[in-house]
Length: 181
Image 1 (spheres, rainbow, N blue to C red):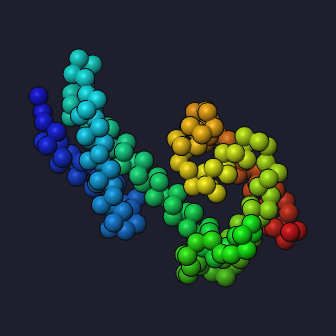
Image 2 (cartoon, rainbow, N blue to C red):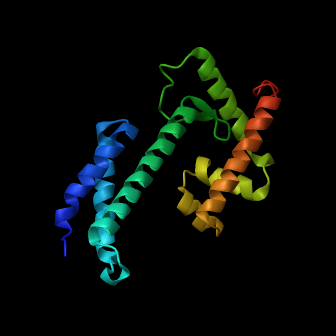
Image 3 (cartoon, one colour):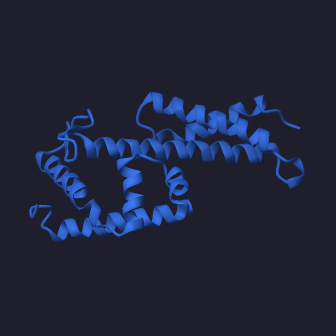
């Protein structure tokens, strides 16, 4: 039987495949770390009598852990862009410390308008969509944490979030990109 230490090289190979999806060196290090944690988790849960080799089972779990980390990093980057320099309507201060440098003035203006519109119209969403969007974007919870808090599945959270954001986006465009506020 193959040992866990013999599989550490597999994590490096898997991480190399994910390099195009990372932004910074520390992101790559985080991905490798998550892959190693996935590897250790797989080793503790592995059952030889289920028909898969340890290498196959651990590789899948490590790859899944790395993809989860990449998704989390992408959500964090998207939140940083949207919240950069956007007034926090409820608290009278600015959210985030990330400047919108490198963006055209039109793009910055549109991001500012949509963020302001999102905060102002968020309460008009139906209950479960409002809960999903609020927990994901305003409270910063992951899909799994949101699902646990709402008492539903992660797939339902994703569906509710997408539906709520689609509704807000359509309303935003119908309002001439927030000019009616």
